[in-house]
Amino acid sequence: MSTRTTVRLPAATVAARTAVTLDDDARYEPAVAFDRAPLRASASSSSSTHVPPTSSAPVPSHVIALRVGLALLFVATCVVLWPFWPWLTLAAWFAALARPMVERLAHITHGRRAAAAVTTMLLLVLSLGPLLALAVSLSADAADLVHEVTRTRSGRQAVIAIVSPDGAIQRPDLDVPTVVHVFRSQGERAWTMASSVAGATADLVLGLFVFFTAAFFCLVDGPRAFDWVERHTPIAHRHALRFAGAFVETGRGLFVGVGLTGLVQAIIATGAYWALDVPRPVVLGVLTFVASFIPTVGTALVWVPVALGLAFTGRESEAALLAGVGILVVGTVDNLLRPVLARWGRLHMHTFVVLVSMLGGLAIAGGWGLMLGPLVVRLTLEALRIAKEEEIV
Image 1 (spheres, rainbow, N blue to C red):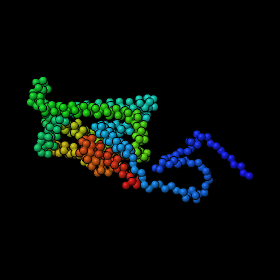
Image 2: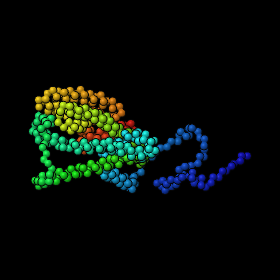
Image 3: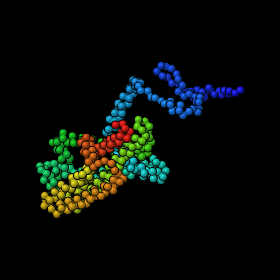
Image 4: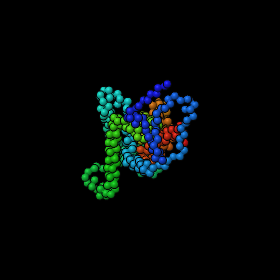
């Protein structure tokens, strides 16, 4: 005679282990049942397979409204942040590049916030001060160069004006009667130019404030901000990491692979302009640095017209020497230094793609498009790779 033992579970345990769901017919069924047969045959377990429903229920109206509202708010946020996207992007790239230095300084300053503050102040002192001094000293020479080139009527006269030392404008003394006379004769035009300069200066000051502030907070709370965005976006963890890697890679490639190479080329070219007694060598050096961002053609956009101007003015030896420096030295730096720097900063894009993306961004967003174009194309390429791997397309 067998003895049957009944084990009673507490009511709280039964309630905790029993869940109910409400189906379309308003019937309650247990979602988690007790294990009545702990050991079952493998044949019976393999035969019971879950078949997902073939028809999906219609999406409730409140869910649709929430999705539409979320999309509209996202677009509105992009519109609000659009005026500052270059500065925010530069701040994020700077924080990604400077994070190793911040980690080392954090051990000395006994805190990440103090290390971030030191790094941001170093950037402010080492970059903003020299840039402002350079901009003030170059403004007059740049204005003279633009005026002399734009008033010419042929390409030959334009390249001659670049190297002509007599092309500088004789600026009168800015005494009170002169200023009053200028405003009386050119009042509307002068007011428009003054307003444009004031607006550009205000935008620059505001942008720099946003950049340094965002750089500090990215250095302090960048990882936590990324974790928050990753948790609240419908993107898988592995995909979010790949997009973040592509974003940082683009900044590193532009800063290191393109920026440092262009800086070295500009320094060499500026030294050549100064040694050959070319007028306004610093202005031409800055233009050489800007031209270095354009693939394929690059710095030749500046030193070739300068060499032609020297040749047209009877300075054939200086023209040949500058052409030799441009081809053998500046070109060699581009061919040798860029691949070395590209080991650490690489865009993983073909040179032609980089060229087209820079030119397209330049046409759409102006000077900042040189940065926006490669960034958008690089993220698009990464999205296509992820879609192919996941067999989405």
